[in-house]
Image 1 (tube, rainbow over the protein chains, first blue to last red):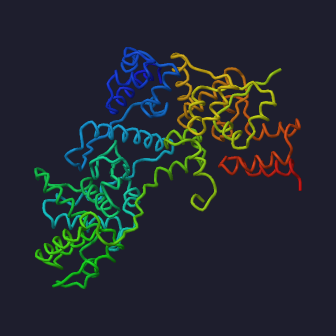
Image 2: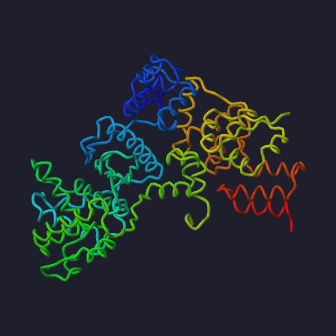
Image 3: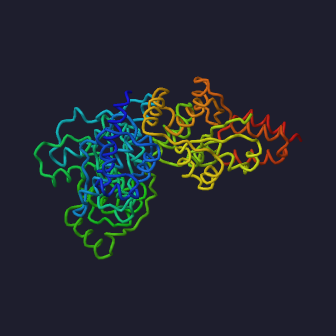
Length: 362
Length: 166
């Protein structure tokens, strides 16, 4: 690569990282303790100058990235990332999160290139047609279970399933006002899930993951209002996590005149769906009627179960694929430990801990 | 003649884990490293970074040297980090010994005719020069391996037999 290209690439990345961090040139200069002038930073961003190693290190520390992040070739942008957000999720916060995701994706693409891995995502519902009604969403979930060979039982780890089908999952632990997001980077689809305890709990996390999967793979009829789109993805999520046939089997098949919450606790603990979502599903598949669903909502409100409902689901929703690929790269000596540390954004001791023989890391 | 050794992070971390910094100084190497390596090890251990500041000559890069370093990193592929590249090419440019335990980096170094050694080479020297007892060295090796160093098992077994025969 020509020096001009390196300098231009560095400038583009620096500018994008600064803007994603919500920093003006002056803000970045202040973060650097005024050791670099605004003009100097401006010249870097324009690709007209290269920093010394000392200045590059200062920039890395200020922007919390690695030298390889700032000097990597050709920046990539995230495409079409939609946040399922609350009103107070500011544009600046969204931009910052996008910036962090972009860095994560750069590292993911870099590792894939090193290992010669190609994106493996294949749209599973390409020939399904458009989804316009709740019945369509229900059928789409059934089709997906068939295409992905899931049968009708519980999905033990939805995140693992998504990763196995080529969808990158990012768990965001900052307390930001959104539930989930989906989009793509190049050919790789992405689902972002907020894991902060104030924003979610284990069953909600799974439901959000399934909901975002709906946004990624359903061909929603063009022109549907946003609320309808959300409702269809909700229906898809419920049907994916708890197929109609399974729920009918579990609850005795026919219409029930009474359905008690304590019957559903075992289902919650097995299928990883909230009691509220299970009641909703029971109404959707005709096991209870709307009046019974309303009665449940009243009971839930009275008991204060909106925030903390009975039943405990032991979730196993942790992305493992990137780390697995990194371990493979280390085993095959395709990367140095230092490179692995930079890609994982971890100190070298943490990579060594991964490699240490123990029960947790055989 | 003073031998010059360029350190990457792996050997520095092993010297620290094996509590061997003091003994290493007795080997008489002129110790060099780069500011990128100092930053990398400081994420793990401020004391190692402080030791480098006190005992090593630290190389910094001008803007044009930065461009050249990046080009050279790209020339060997994407398997090594900029930190690795900085230590590798510093050793090459001054014809010094590159101290690294990283197998991948050693392969790249050998292709570039850079002389390489690792923590076992240093421990062998400490043994040969009778600067540390075999028992001490064996304990250090245990501590180094216990912290996840990737050293060849057969070479370690051989050292154990040599340093501390039972």
